Length: 267
Image 1 (cartoon, rainbow, N blue to C red):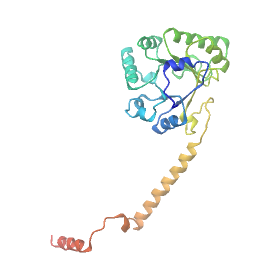
Image 2: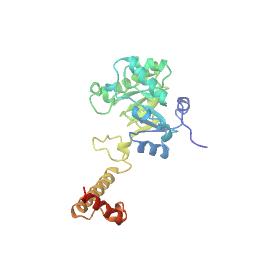
Image 3: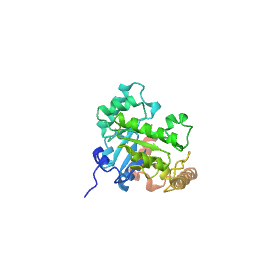
Image 4: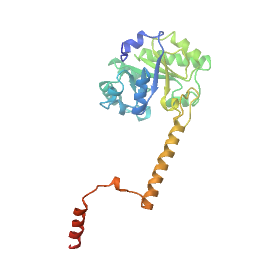
């Protein structure tokens, strides 16, 4: 039986029974690879989702676009307009790290929203910077309370990022939220990584919770060397007169070209 695209109802029904996989994909090649590999869900840039061929490339992927928080509209109505546009384009849920009021307003209009708890990059100055959260009982309870607040305002799920696995596992017992674990251990309902980390071409900070499954950076460097070598050979042939040769140019009857040259001489 062919795999079908999961609905929110499917995902909820599978809570505690199935571990979903999610990948952050930012190119069409990554998106196609996720589809072919059997990934369940993708986090995608909004500008990709709205392309008409998105579902041709990713027919069964549960797609979650997200707007960068500080690039998001300040007016709640504009955020709602964005969410409607995403759902109309084929999103299955939207990521939103904005206020609980904003999440609640979207949820009231039946837009499935995934929030964010634990290490939330936008808010990490409040939790001590880019480091693990929930390593004390008090901090872990704050993560739980934030989950319950998302639950109260009608969110569908949360990304739970860089918290001890015990925290994720315990919270999972006490919430109906879909828990997307990024560095939060196996206790969530979904495991989430970025394609750039998985494929090994992230040249910036590589998070501890990510795992490199391929080394495309080395492969890309090798391919770039091949490009440079080919371009250098082309330059050399042009400068030496070796390019272009007869097989690469248009041929015409000699008599016609002789007549052309004679005509030009009379100009």
